Length: 169
Image 1 (tube, rainbow, N blue to C red):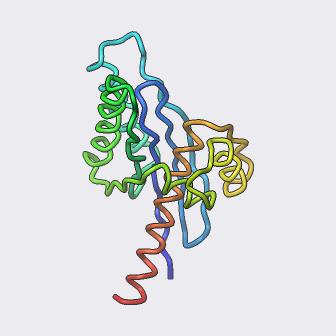
Image 2 (cartoon, one colour):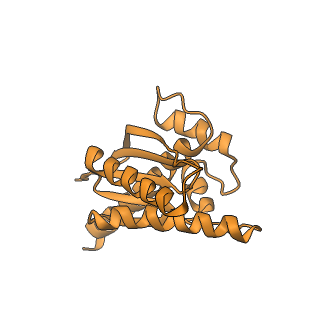
């Protein structure tokens, strides 16, 4: 017997941080919400990070997820950009942890393989699959579609972990 689990997926960024909330009940995935957090680019770094933290904290209060999932950082050729992404990712890990949520971390390749079937999928393919898995959402390629894919990847992991514990537990 599978249990329902509500998952907040987060695609970290200091420019456009995607978020998506799904509910998984066994193999059934239900869309709860999605969007993009856009911290003010003209603010000091500390204020941008604080805004991102507050926005994620508000999403957690509104949607009441059981767990969260965050994409891992890929290496960037620009060290300054990589550092900014690292700061954003830290906030994306911290906000759910502060709320007492377990936070799974997944590489972009693992997320793509989980939802599209290949780790080499592009953003358009990820969005197309999100529209198949979550009918009626009309998602475009981008941060919110990626965040939903991260949440679904986590749901697959949670489903597999539950199946293993039922089998061997």
